[in-house]
Image (tube, rainbow, N blue to C red; front, side):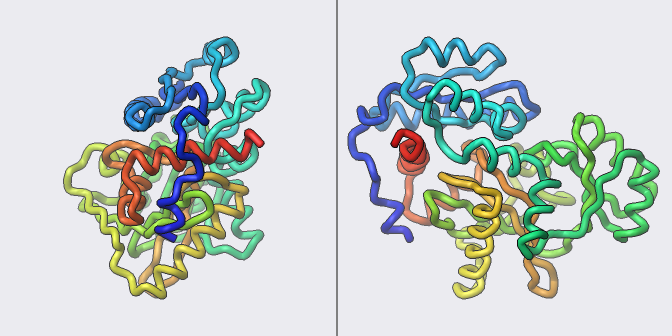
Length: 317
């Protein structure tokens, strides 16, 4: 696996032509996207690629249509960039782009549809409900049992997520999740170890085990905290890690994911895995997980960014 990933498909940076690095956007994850995008842009330029950073506001289409670009590197997190919207626009413009296509992006961004698809394919994911009021959330707490995860179905970076371990927390959890203008998803809370698995060009990267002293791996733990621990190698026996990496690959393929991405998994006290969500445009900041796993697989950050850019070639054929 590592040897395969270390062999670039393209050796000449000029073969990529003029590359638009799309970052920023208008989602709740704009700040993270800008940071990811700047890191990607710097890595591409250091590798000799003719890369140009663009803030993908709602005025981005004329800039792309008239900019003489040959392809796009998508580093947009959340709505508008990770949900099939920018992918569809790029297809209309005839510009190849990195990562998953329209359908896989839309599915991956929607945690409800992803779970329904996984369940239909017999893949493990926590029991859930969709709720429309705080009263329905209280009913779900009775039906599913506490603790619960309450989250917007169509947000990323743990935005709007709460852990409800007491009925008194229902109202505040509802207020936080429903403020995100998204259906509210309620899941059984899985107690156990949290892992994340990156996927790059059809290969599952080494798993990372996540540990935080916070209540869960929330936005603060992901992007700001210095006490979050990332263990890679993850400490599992090789055979068990191989099984979980296989599950990660199945989960990513189930939504039609391609190019690169990430899947989050919990393993409970009985050693049963539970799939949580798919990220089709994962973070690329100094706290991000795919670059960490890639390093263990023998890829520098510049190598990783190059290999992700190569995923746009499939749409150029």
